[in-house]
Image (cartoon, rainbow, N blue to C red; front, top):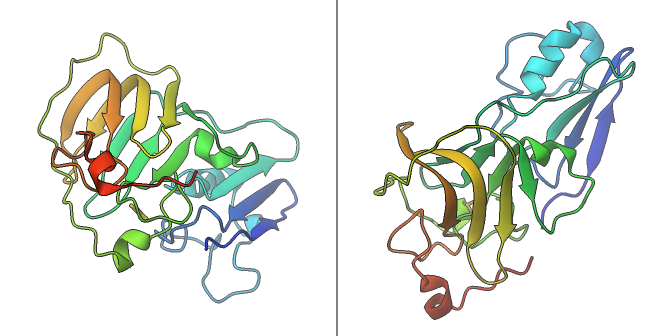
Length: 218
Ligand code: FES
């Protein structure tokens, strides 16, 4: 089960929140230079040791949305990146960034309005989010993308993500997709992405979820 613990690290001007239900330990925070996050220190995150701009910069690197920040004077808040992007990661989840609207999820997951790691192996116990079950499940897909998409006339705007019951992720909105090695592979505004792990046309759904007996449980 996902760790549902949530911890708020309070600073004089800015608070940082860590959501254990979303964290998949990519370690962008722990590996960042500076004193904000130091593994083994208590508390692990100390916002008063760095400039607020540095806190914001490091928190916004978090690819799962597990880290968020709140400025106490409300002088700034996170803004979506100008382009909506999905990276089909090597043997792992979809890393999504942009102006995200993920349907049917709890309202208190603020970070995933901008950044999310979505399961594409079908094994997560925290769907639609990745919980690293792809590792134990030995999920293998290197993130190749064969189609190029219909192209885009515009970029940005809201990206709607609808996890269909026992089916794919329906995507609607301007999107640029990167393959597992970072290439811009696909652009378009409509897609059905495999989240059962069984499609033979990954990352796109080919209907294999039915024969695979995929249960989304979300
Ligand atoms: S892709 Fe990570 S748990 Fe499915």
